Length: 267
Image 1 (spheres, one colour):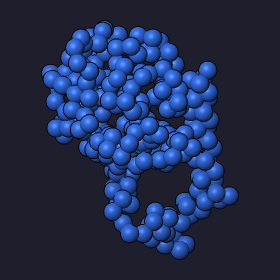
Image 2 (cartoon, helix red, strand yellow; image 1 turned 135 degrees about the vertical axis):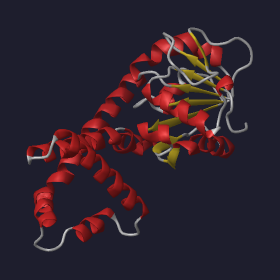
Image 3 (cartoon, helix red, strand yellow; image 1 turned 60 degrees about the horizontal axis):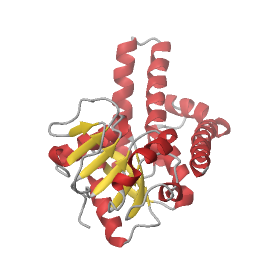
Image 4 (cartoon, helix red, strand yellow; image 1 turned 180 degrees about the horizontal axis):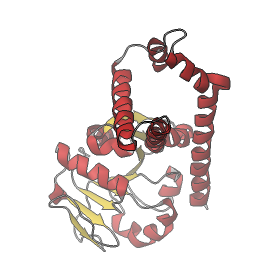
């Protein structure tokens, strides 16, 4: 198969919608070559068709599942026979393993994808995994995802961990930004100014970290001069590895939930 150009999206919520907008903006697909199956009309990019039933005629190059994991059986009952034989099925359903998808859909190859929300501006992360896709299909799937940001292939055993880190990670980063702004307000800054400063500080710090040769830990030490105010603040975060332990517990909770969803899909 060639790099997928014609797509059917099964569901188009926040994540699938972000991917679609970026694909069209980047010229990876045309709106006229996309059909969205959804329960109610959404505001979609120009040219994208939508409806409550899949189109008649030829199958597309790829179908992407973008519904909630808990809806898997319902959706399979609705569309499995219609998409039988499609060359590529992409799934962004958190926690749903390839075997669970293969048991419900008779398709050429299955690729699991875990994107995160910044894919909408081409700054996202997309983790991919497939046991059924050959080298050519893997290359084509990776090419489709490339406009969305960093694309990484991972082992099946790592998928829940990657989902917790990269898939859920933006939400945790947004919480940090919000907390940083609230802390600024707590020490005397106006709320709106504290938020602007927090946003710009995190954006600039992340951009520098992405370009720097040094790891983030070394950059933190460059900011923190011995005995200075930054070092005093870092002492709070570093005490008993408080920040690392908090984030490890956070990721463990997200990964456990992915494992629960996988178990439900198996049954």
